[in-house]
Image 1 (cartoon, rainbow, N blue to C red):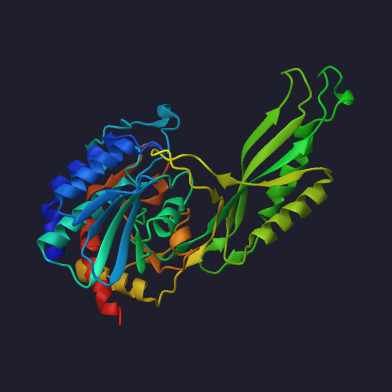
Image 2 (spheres, rainbow, N blue to C red):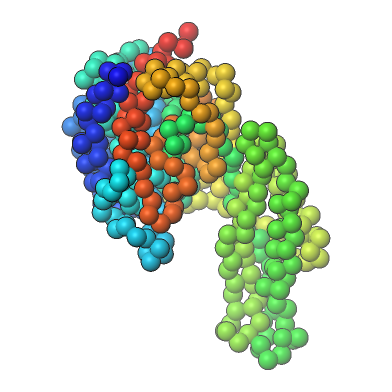
Length: 399
């Protein structure tokens, strides 16, 4: 067995215990303070050269001070419980059963930071350092606003890595991209009237219903990317105002999630929406662009437009080649190279800043945001070994 893999296997009880602590510590978006304390303490105990929090609340652990900057990123916030009646396992106990650890954040994605923190321990113990600076970033608020944390790290902390490894769940496959997304709203206006005489008013919901029908049809015509797949659009929320439950509603607003591929610009998307509104025959409907302005747990507000670009890195890139070499050296087989269905912090590292970015993480995408969320303990151990070996392997591919 590869010696790095052997050491990771020896650390399995500690990795498992830390993962259970992470799940027991709730960390909904913008409420991550307690889990950052836990991670900060474990990073310090595991021998990082420096550990600190930035102004947004991200925890950043550093090893080494070499020329090449490598970041291993894991967001530490989670979505909420959802319908608790759908869970058959305790949500925040981190119980082990059948080789899995269960609980909110098990797959999406506390396993990443768990494995990365113990990878640093292996790097220090086995002297796997080189001419690189490794940053392990425990990032906040990704579930609410993909990549905002990395905008802050690059723009305010002044850390712009040469390579980024995203630890979102990949089933231990190597991922090299995903679709982006655009969030926006459409608003229709009406005139309220008593529900007993609806002809006296203008029903804003009826107007919106016509638009929704046209938007649903857009899914049939959206373009497809050879690697990333097809764009999509979903009406995810509906809001309205009305004087009462027995009145004609005077406004309606829908929230839309538009998944984008490289050929989709914001201008192109809004053009498609305007055409859909025109086909619906609704006058006066407006499109509202959105900005994320929620304060972090440190009370920091860092406004970000809710447009998250898609990204793809070449299979022949140095980062992918280094990941493949690391995988084969550790596990002795050829890895699967694929993409995420959902979006990650790579939307900023790769999509905005063109930093070579890859994905390799414990857990399966299908358990993200789902009841009985889980991660296989063996995945945590193997991911730990991968994160420990990857930085040094990268140096062999940088000339």
